[in-house]
Amino acid sequence: MITTRIDNITDLKGPWKRVDPPAPKSVKIELTARCDFQCFFCATKDRLRDKSDIDWDFYCRILKEMRAEGVEEIGLFYLGESFLYPRLAEAVAYAKQVVGFPYVFLTTNGRRATEDRVKAVMEAGLDSLKFSFNSYDPEDFARITRVKASEWEIVIQNIKAARRVRDENGFSCGIYASSIERKGEEARLMSEAAEMIIPFVDEHYYLPLYGQAGLTAGAMGTKPVAGNPGRLDAMRAPLPCWSLFTEGHITFDGRLSACCFDHDGRFHMGDLHTTPFMKAWHSEPFQKLRDANLRQNVCGTACEKCIAYQ
Image (cartoon, rainbow, N blue to C red; front, top):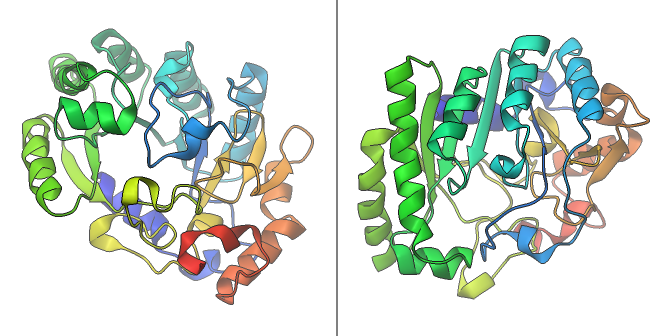
């Protein structure tokens, strides 16, 4: 199940708990930095760095390089919405069928994950499709995403259609959904909304509200958790942050990032157009940042602005 995989990645231990860990178990690569939502809890809407699509030749090369280094799981998304990328199915097929990644996964906001496009990525070999389902009714959806309220029903219908496509065609792709934890009466409403989609997914789980490296802390009066502690039912300590050690993040323009919330470029650890993946993974800036995390003192580092430490 997807929660088992998440917990394996966020559990920082063994040879990965060092400044120069082995190749990450999992890497997320940004096919596009564009997104059709403007969620209040996500800094993507603030356009703190360029928003465009990945270069196809770079994508093909870096996937082969990472697989040769031992990366096993590849997420075809990072901070953008990958269903906006026109070659998504082709990207899945290349990662799965050509390069041979054992596990290819994808997270979507669901709006553009139409029946035909979902069928295409499943046919291409996608192993996991997760929907971020974070609104309890049309009005809440519009308030959070800045997208018209009627689109909420489209997301729900796309989730149901994904299950139908998977089952009717015998695809092996897992279908999952996550929701951000709400408080008070909103928690009850979110739970009721989740019950509408739970019959159509293999697993549903909750995530805490993140502050996204401090960039969205306090948005709309909310209080996020410290750092990125993983999922709600298996939260990790904020320091050292697992994300620096067990998961790689590659921006559409070929930068290796140390953070799962690198909206402004402050976590760039190397240009993969000119630097081999493992050399960037073990670069001096990356090792210094990991050392600060292991010492649990990130003052003066790129991690300092994260709400966990203010």
